[in-house]
Image (cartoon, rainbow, N blue to C red; front, side):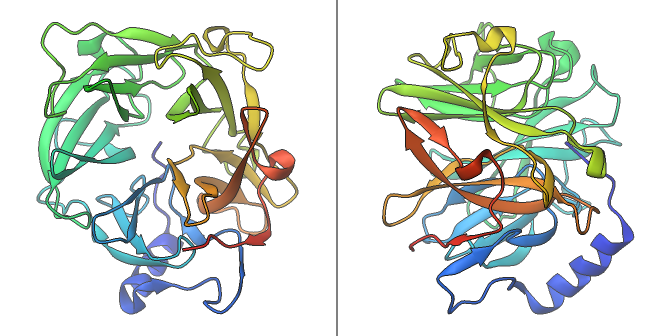
Length: 331
């Protein structure tokens, strides 16, 4: 979700453009410290592109959807924005671009995005853009739907997934999580497709990960954007079917807002939510990005990364809270 850009972000962006690379962690060290990027990059989405680099996209606290590139998941270089003022989507003229979701579909980099203004729960919607290269430029292909067209209030936070040769979009923000089938190119809703509800009203910012025959629905609960008062928490449920029913370890349904906590606040970071895709390093270790608010510098939502382990078929982040320092990914 969008948070208004502040003066310090503009100054940091100017600095970032001047030297390119974000170097908060030493290249020689075997460890890294959170945050991996110490300014506002909410709602991250990550892909490893055909060139071998990892690319990260985020809600536009930096206007027009910022793009970063990394070889090691720790040190990132700003490489531009997905759009310009001339090419940015327009179906919500005063809206911000929130919560992107990056994919590689049919030989193109496909970026699903939300567009909304605060309070525009019936006019917000989800659109899609494509590019030949992960760093863009992206060409807007228009909206998939608005809330008032699909009949779901607050239709934001898209997530794309393929299953059995079919393409689906999941989405939703505190008005239920829904899914619908897309066209073969992923650029429109399949004619005649009907939405189906997947989870309850506590959730937004979902991501689904398949592992060992189970589907894991990651989501965020609580408030994202109230600085040190933010209560955002990353949670998860599990199902043996993409469309659910999802539940917690006791089998209580996510449709009734039951879940397991994955990442919650600690003494250094609050508002820990809206996780990215899970990324695997060369040793097979899983990692996840998300945003948080730093207690020491609570302006903006900084980029975090943590190791995901698996215990008894469930994802675990050590301590259920952000690490301060950890072994870095092997890449």
